[in-house]
Image (cartoon, rainbow, N blue to C red):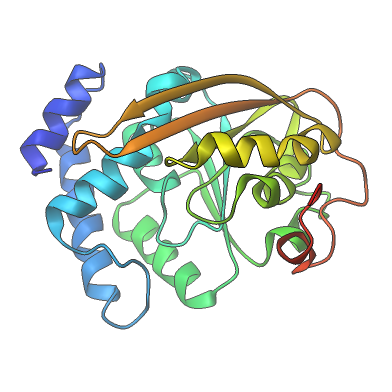
Length: 240
């Protein structure tokens, strides 16, 4: 996906980028590729692939959750890595208040540099593990939305994310072709942690790759014992 194709595809979805936003994506791309030589941020470094599989793919969630486009919402991105999906969302929808969590200091440093270089405000970057931060009263059940991309299967992700979502908020699941199977396997975890599947959207990226956005509404508080201590959700997923 060329830069031009990226701009046009977003226009078709009703999202018009400003010159400044186009420049911010370009700067982000350059920083990603440069830093990736020292720190393992992504296996995808070819420009057209970054624009499609990172930038465009990150923004697809806003095609289906219209409040992300217009409302002053809080979103937490768990295992933010190189900043997907939260930084592309922040660039395009600057009114969003974004918190990014990552356990690796080198990635946190990169995210901080991007935020500074792109002159983004309303972004907090937290160094730590989701299991620990999810028990912190400053973050627990404080967010309108939580998401995570390419971090873990849904049964595990639910325990990483739902503790952060306030009752009435949503966990936004962004998945590839295994989405439905993962959702079925994660059903018990979602229910136990206070979530209910509200809607599923399936679509294809311009290159034909299958994608799903699943909106899980938080309808009751997460029991206090979740998330369990660091490492446990991945080793012993709820319901497995």
